[in-house]
Each structure stands twice: as C-alpha cells, then as structure tokens.
Amino acid sequence: MSSPTGPASGLPVRMPRPRQPGRHRRPEPLVAPEGAPALVLAVPGVPSTTTRSLAEEVVSIARSELPGLDARIGYLDGDDSEFPSLRSVLARAAEERTARYEQAVAAGVEGIKEPDGPVAVVVPLLAGPDSALLRQIRQAVMDSRVAAELTDVLGPHPLLAEALHVRLSEAGLARADRARLFTVATAADGIILASVGGEEAVQAAGITGMLLAARLAVPVMAAALDQEGSIASVAEQLRSSGSQQLALAPYL
Image (cartoon, rainbow, N blue to C red; front, side, top):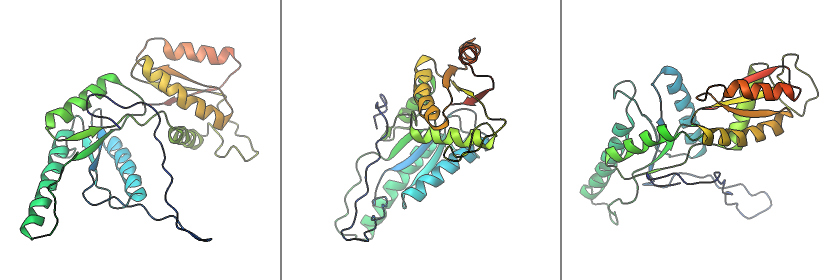
C-alpha cells in the first residue's frame, strides 16, 4: 500500500487468519472493523456496461471475503450520473464519514472519537503498471482533496494467472484442470499476454506469464500492444521454439 505519490512495490501478502484452539477449531471470520476506510475501485478508461460488470464482480468478491467492507466503484472518466467519477465517490465517502460522526455526537454516544486517518483506500483496476493511467488516478485522488491512500496495481499475482487460465479454458484454448489426463484438440501450445504501459508493463505481465506457464505447461510470453511490432516479434519467437497454435490473451 502507498500514498498518492507512488505505489508500493512487491506482491500482495496473504496474512494467515487466526485459529481457535482445539481439535476441531475453525478460523474466526474476518469482518471489517467499524470506521474502516472505504475501498474504492478506480476504473480507468471509457466507462461501459462491460467495465461496470467487471468492477461489480470484483467488489462483490471483496465484500464476500470481508463482511462489512464499504466497497465502492469510481470511474476515472465518469460522468457522475450512470458512472460516478472517482472524485465524486471519494467526496461522498468523506461526507458520509463526517455525517456518521456528527450523528453519533448528537446522539450522545460515549467515547466517540473524531475520525482520523484515510477516508478511503483506492485500488486501480489495472492488471499491470500503466504510468499514464496511474498519473491520472493519482491526480484525481489529489483533486478530490480527500485523505486517501493509493495502492499498487493488481498484478503480478497468482490469482491473475488463475483468471487467465479460466478464460483460456472457457475459450477451449487450455485444459480446465491440468491434473486431469485428457487433451483438448483446440488447445493453444503458445500464449502471448498482451499488455499496455510500456516495458514496465511487459515485465510485470511476464511474471504472471511464468505463473501461467507453470499451470499450463506451455510457453507464455508477454508483448506490448502499444509498441509496434511487439506482438509479431513475440509470436515469431514462440513459433521458432516449436509452438504452432498461438493464443493472444489481454493483460490490461
């Protein structure tokens, strides 16, 4: 996690859940603490029903993993009607936190403290680094004048490799389960991960590509959609190494 001035480095760390003592112990369910910052998913690009569906699915999973989480969606290029802008979502979260505090004071709640710390944690809906989009998201956070923390992008991460595996299997380009001994006639024997954001994005996609290659036991290479000839060059490398049927998977 980082401040709006720059993302932190490294992969996300999954912390072990506390366990109850006893032979048949169950992990205690995690819940968002009262007064926790809102999680705001920052969606870049032109808003559409497709991006909204994806963002809503991500938010739904986050809420199911952490009950009580205040998760919201803000669009970098939102219009504040059908697609609320990132700035307006952050401003709304700040207003609601202040209103909750004032209501508690008016109700005479004992021990109530004035809220401090970040109002929200902003998570860019980006698989890999894109300096141009990250600058825009960071600027939107600063323009909102709301105390918010900006995290790193989502990848590289094993869960993204798993998601790519699922998408490829749905398209008939990969086995759904590598442990099952069956073949798929249309399976690709070489995969190109197409990224946007320059060389840094290609390197990040390459890390997820290694994780995907380990799952599928086929070569996976990353290429840049925003660099002329990059896709063709990587495709030629895969063919020269023996791959005949290539699949192009977006990693954006």
